[in-house]
Image: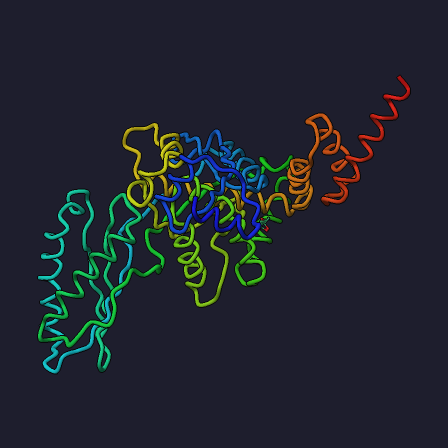
Amino acid sequence: QERRRWLENQHVALMPIDTAQLERADHLSENVFSTLTLPVGLIPDLVVNDSHFQVPMATEEPSVIAGANHGSRFLIKAGGSHAFSFRSGIWGQIVLKKGSSFNDVRFQKELVLLKHKTNQKFDHLVRHGGGVRKFFPRFAAQKINLRVLIDPSEAMGANLVNTILEFMADELSQSDLTESKSFAIVSNYPSQLTKVNAELPVSLFGKEAEGLKVAKDIEALSDLGCHDVYRAVTNNKGIMNGVDAVLMATGNDTRAVEASNAVLACHRGQYTSLSQWHVAKGILKGQLTLSLPLGIVGGSIEARPDVKQNLQLLSRNEDFSVRDLAQIIASVGLASNLAALHAIVNYGIQAGHMKLHARNLVAALSATEVEKEQVYHLLTAKRVYTATAAKDFLKKVRQGEKGNGHRH
Ligand code: MEV
């Protein structure tokens, strides 16, 4: 409240806020003065590995939810998508200065003991199926660059991994093999990879030659993204539209997922599409691999009833795990990508997008529901989608009403 008063004294117009809501937000974050709410939309039926899910998506952009639903309806007609999540852990880095008696064979032996000691210290993680998995040391003239793979189990794990890395760095820096530690920090390098694929009969896209043409056009657009970075980055943005919305709805770290997938998209030495689509024998095959460092426990999840609600919606089935969430998110990414490619090669992206944008324009008007509906129809009929046009149409609607009033 003090921060709000301070801003209001500077004539900042603040939205009114419920005290309890402000207090909850203050406990969650830093220097809080307000909150931001997002609509949560739904994919009512996403089929992944023969299971049905209702998927919450948090975004202000209606075309993101419409696109994911359009794509998932195509996927359902093809029996859904098939996904597999390889969850071996997330990366950490410890850099140490070598001591004068450094010996790499002895150092490797120390690592074996360290792994044991660390897993004993963090036994709660081991009990949940996680723990330190592997070390990958690299030795330079003066330094040791130690990469560590740590399985955070059902959590995203960045905080826990940092705690574990700092413990290990302190232990290692006490050895006579090292002089001092330089740093210990989680790495957002791609990890927790999830692969998803789907096979769609070309007949889903139109009758006979027409369906094949649409599928071939989707393939051609996908191929462009394999070697043209201007297309690749946009293709990947379309995937992230769906991915980020589910990450937001489930309280996951969009920044970590975005950063790691930017690197994954460069794994062939050049930035490329994260998805590929090919046609063969009347089937359009799509596949997508994503790095999905996610959690369904830990972080702020326990303190967020909005996120808990969304996770409960997803996890009706008792043994729901972070692996399921990763598979769902990758499938939403594939569905979003398919819908975008399908729209671009058929009727262009704007037709659907702008109709949805018109809804945002009318929502911003100070008008009755009936007036908003009339303005919406005028915007979409005339295909002009600007805030000025919305205001002009509102004036016209009101003048028309007055005119009608006079006649009566
Ligand atoms: C818009 O938010 C996303 C698209 O540009 C993605 C794509 O071009 O594939 C439609």
